[in-house]
Image 1 (cartoon, rainbow, N blue to C red):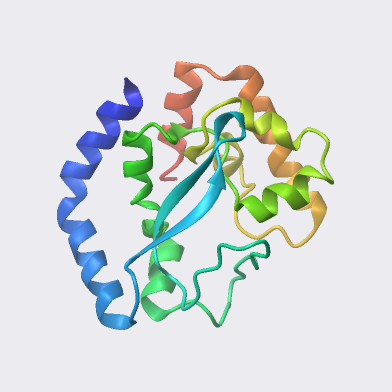
Image 2: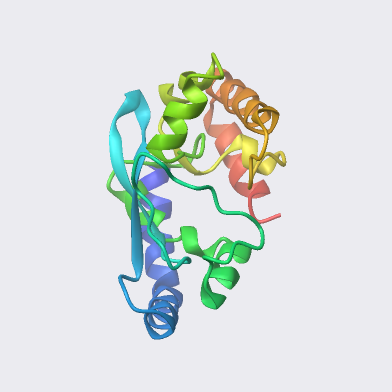
Length: 180
């Protein structure tokens, strides 16, 4: 109920911003405005996660190179979108469609799930709940690049803690901490 209500309200409220971002992405580079990447959801189900396109490439294969801070593939508009996390706004539709939740472990590209799943024993426990637009790991500093396995391990530890302690109040707390 929280997911549907909030995602519908935010889509309606943010419609002018979504239109401006669509225009900015379309004017800067050729190609689709939205990037749909295969991600793993609850129970291991694959879904197409939506993002505003922020890069010149659209990797969705067996090998997905994780973006870095000064990645040359990122467009000028994409840099602004990624810095402000506005590239994530289309995921409100994933939430509305029931593929994601507002709060939950952030879904990773399928290629990354396979890689980290083979190296971190608790990794797949994250998929016991719906993936989220924001999550306990993100609001506790475990977001962005994971250049070393220990960085992903820290994220997984926080995600597994969230899965074990998930509650409506924890979700509200996570939502409140997200803009900060």
